[in-house]
Length: 111
Image (tube, rainbow, N blue to C red):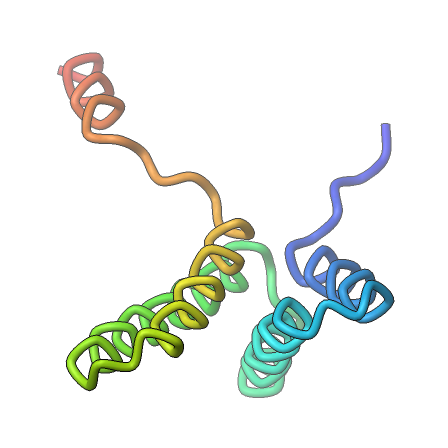
């Protein structure tokens, strides 16, 4: 059975595919994510595991959400749309969040 691809490697593969497809928006967002991951690796002085890479991506999502809020206040719908696309792309690399029902079921099972 092949070894699962790390999050950092998956982003690199998708970046290459986006560049070949000449998808400028996706390429830009993935380059930004790749740069943030590389910067974190340099800070840490070690390769990132998937959990650490996910934390970096979550930070980028939070930054984009803040940007959306600011752009809405400034009445800049074109920038809101661009940031929301980036949020959707970044979230596609993150593990699914547990729903309230899942959390409640886990609590009841534990008790």
